[in-house]
Amino acid sequence: MLASVVGLLNLALAVLRPAVFLAGALTAIVAAGSYAVRTRRLSPFSPIARFLRTSVDPWLIAPMERRIVRAGGTPAAAPWWTLAAVVIGGLLLLSAIEFVRDQLTQMVFASVTGSLLGLIIRWTFGVLQLALFAPRGGQLGGRLAVFPLVALGFSAHGAHPRAIAADRPPLRHARRDRADRLFRPAIP
Image (tube, rainbow, N blue to C red; front, side, top):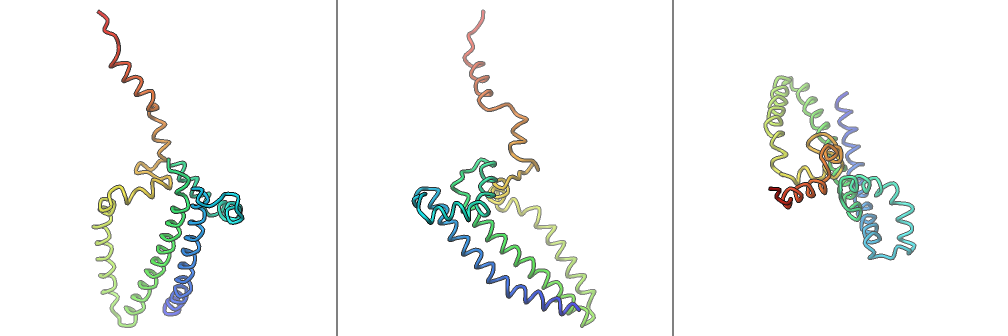
């Protein structure tokens, strides 16, 4: 039973690897074209630009653009963030399927050889290693590891950056109040 599931996962990987590569390559071509239109390197009235704006941008680039603009980014960067999301999403999908396949393969091997205790010990040490290194994962990359999450609308506080900023007074009022205090005439 598990061996047939492992075979199906191998087949899925054989189909998904080229599909993910093709999706990344097509997204790269579309992202380059969309970026060229957005930065006026390609005339916005050309047939290619019209095709990109009417057929591709609404369903591929526009959702990422909305998230980037909400997070304070520039709309011209949306094609590249879309490309990054497609590439990283494809790699994560392939990695997850490979992980499940490897775990099922280990289970099949352990059930055939009769070493289920060894499998349980291996999984326990794997979980412990993950627990040791996972909390430090954000520290290894510093802000670079967190920036894509902030660009997509997440923050370390669990709320959107605008929701956090709504609790504070606007910056211009804080500057004006500070300037008023500094340059207030002295009253005797």
